Structures are given as structure tokens and as C-alpha cells.
Length: 116
Image (tube, rainbow, N blue to C red; front, top):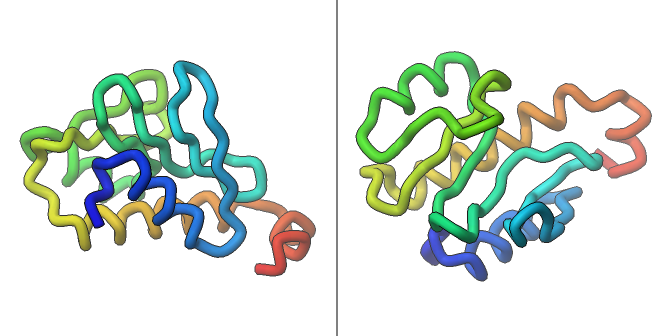
């Protein structure tokens, strides 16, 4: 699996419990949990954007090929280019963590509706 291929990104996020996928904005692949975005595949650049923890944001944005995500950086999002030196396993773990960060901010009712 190569998460920098759109089909693989979509298959991966759809395999996470409670996740939905929509195509919006410029036809980006946007992964959501409870209607809230946690990751996206930028179809123009092939980058993967996701929400990071405060520490993760600081550490990741110091690495080549990873930058604060435009428009989303103030909320702790990063944009990872295909050329970044981040393994597929690490990228998947960060996407999983992004989902968990967003899931934790949902109401108890919203989590219950998702069966989570």
C-alpha cells in the first residue's frame, strides 16, 4: 500500500471504524469522523494533510517535505509531501492518531451514534 496514491489513501481511511469519505473543494479526498475532518488527500499536490498533536506538529514540521498545512495550520494540521522521509507505517500511524484526536473532541452522543 502506498498512501500517496489516492486509491490507497481512500481504502486505508475507509477501513478505520466510523470513517466517511467525501470529495470536496477541488475534488480532494476528505476523511471524516462524525462529520469532522481528520485527514485529506490533496489531489493537486499528492500531499496528505492531517491533524497532529501539538508535539507532533512541532516535530513533523521540522522535517524536510512536511510543512504546516495551508489554511489548517492554526488547528495543528500538517501537509506531508510524497518526497518526505516518513515511512508508510509512520504515516498510517499519524493518520490513525489524527482520527483519534478528532474523535476525542466529539460529543458522547456523536460517538455513541457511531458505535464508538
